[in-house]
Amino acid sequence: MTATANRPEWLKRKAPSQTSLLEMGRLLSGFSLHTVCQEADCPNIGECFEKRTATFMIMGRVCTRNCRFCAVSNGTPCKLDRDEPLHVAQAVNELELKHVVITSVTRDDIEDGGAEHFAKTVEAIRNLNPGTTVELLIPDLKGLWAGLETIAQSKPDIINHNVETVPSLYSAVRPGAVYNRSVELLKRAKEIDSSITTKSGMMLGLGENKEQVERVMEDLRDVECDILTLGQYLQPTREHYPIYEYISPGVFEQYRNIAYRKGFKYVAAGAFVRSSYKAAEGMKKIRDGE
Image (tube, rainbow, N blue to C red):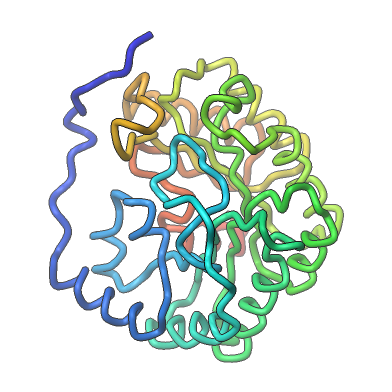
């Protein structure tokens, strides 16, 4: 199968507001913070920045892994900024966020994978913003589950870890990651604290088929994963993994319905859906029991 070249109409968006980009850029720079919106070339950056919301990316902007789908830089990362948890909390306060998503680069160079830094960030946010719900999108911690316990003990409202794709594509798309380890992380998060909502997501259009996608859904439900996000993979550069298919809005809706039938409590599925896109909406629906 060859990569598809031309984007369909449903994948075209208006250019983001330069005013919003500049205003948010100044705010984030003032706190010395990074966002996945900027570093991963997210197509929703204009919409989110106009609404004065962002997904904070802690522990620097350089990842120790080199996943073939991801636009984030890889190489030798910087030392941890011990003031970063406070700066994130201050930015959340400045933006008056009611729900915040915190993610990170993967830091295989740190003994606990950055677990303590995540926990300190949750603590700082709660101290300064007691009414804000907190969602963490975490790496796999290399399977060091003591780090997962550290994160869970900080009591985030949601622990998110994306499986990203189907198992057969891992070696090509996610070198350095292990599908079963990712699923196990979600399983262990529930075992550590069943009150924490768990969440995972997949990119579609990488060459997977419907049967494989449904099998991943079943694997996630087997470990009581609560929330699922499904979005279209968009190739950051020609050097990245190619797009094999553009998934139509109708097919995304089919997957959404299938996921609900399999028992997920909240499902977001669509071309521009990303792990943190409209995350506050998912949090609200979970809390309201809808």
